[in-house]
Image (cartoon, rainbow, N blue to C red):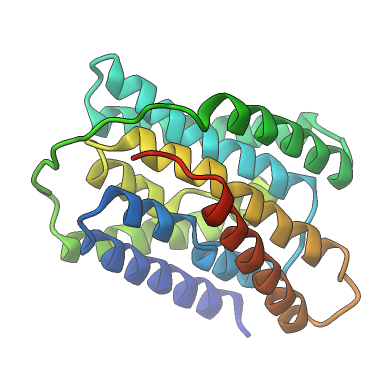
Length: 238
């Protein structure tokens, strides 16, 4: 398929996903939708399903993106400003990292697992707190064209940003605004669920000789199994 056409389809699909997310009211539901690897799957198709260490770097960065917005807002920075700063951090750190980090996929995956285990051990007993939902001031219809254009531009940069494009927080750009009253649980639930995304990456990495559709389907099956286990045994309070 022509790359321009594929990029266009990918961008439109991500825009539609954002539209669906914007219709949800629960912060936990938004976090769950955000964790689903639909944008990642689309991005993998757009990047020919290549899985390497840069994909794991991107997974680190998407967790950093969410927690950065949370901490910026907690310290009084406007959520829109925090969003822009966090996106710039993602792109900047990602660009530097793919040039400086030459570790293998296995090494990066192991580092991620260790970091994830540390996070879960520290966070799982967080008391949580009830939050009042603030009105959403951004129309879902406005998000669709904005994210579509942004996704198209970023997919065009995949040769420069490598696998970090696969995990770029397309939906997160608006999810953090809509979840500005529950940023902590958005960041926490995605970080918890991120190990399921890593499991998907690992599956696809070791099925490199299979056709892309087989690799994707296998990865999604493994992702679903791991996500189910996470939701069953590792619960975070909203």
